[in-house]
Image (tube, rainbow, N blue to C red; front, side, top):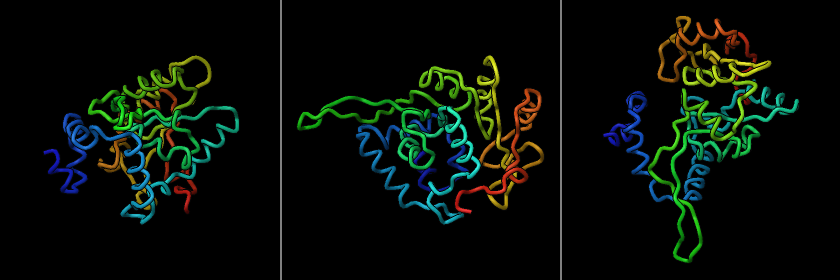
Length: 235
């Protein structure tokens, strides 16, 4: 363990791995890997791997309303960022072509890098087994400050991991927009809560406490089932 769990392919078991387990996996799989090699591996995976349910590339499973709101904001003079609990280097590989967001505007979970020289004296960077930022929950506003240096005017989330980011956004002066997507459409996508009687699923967590805070603070909760005519861009 934890390698036995990962190799088993049991997604529910993998979801229960601790941060220490994840750091152990990071150390074993990434230590000493040149950043360019990592990027090439990610690109190859994204170009070939398909989602088991939809039989499509993962980069094709983007939400149509998300693409529309990003385009709308940029057209009206806003700069858009991705703030994710996922690996920053991983998301940067595809953020420009999929979301129109350049790599320098991606804030994610970060591991360390180390500067060195190859056998020909050429400088390069390798990945290190050191977690610099877990960009989830309180880590999201911390990452925003570290990487952007400005409080957002608007923030969009879909789970308990986004609570602190929306709180931080809403604490700013002037007009602010905070929105949450509620995944309540099992037919077209997924349904998870446990808020509003939805299943307590491993796909994500949207608790009643988050729902209550949204109502208290005036955050808009978007129903995927009732508010979105289209979910995916390929529909």
